[in-house]
Length: 88
Image (tube, rainbow, N blue to C red; front, side, top):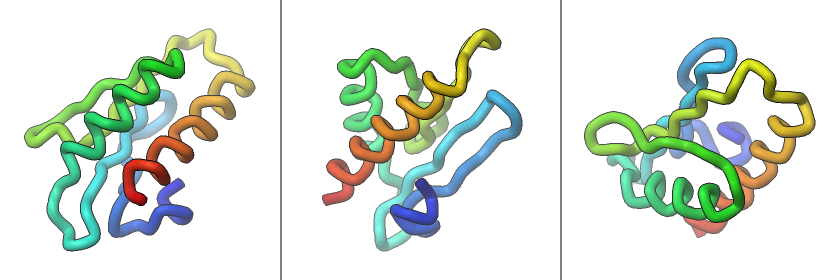
């Protein structure tokens, strides 16, 4: 996702299952409004993400240990669509 959207907009954080994406605007400022918009969209689609940090521009993922590859694939696809729409 970071490659597709551009590393200036989306920077991955974390290790293992505890992952996050820090979101920025093209000018380098934090994109809290985009993070909130993406969070709402994914909640509507059935995924639980949390906006973190100050000013809440970090999307936090903490899936259960029982998460399967198919669930992760669905999340990545839905997240990609939501981010592309939000940055359009």
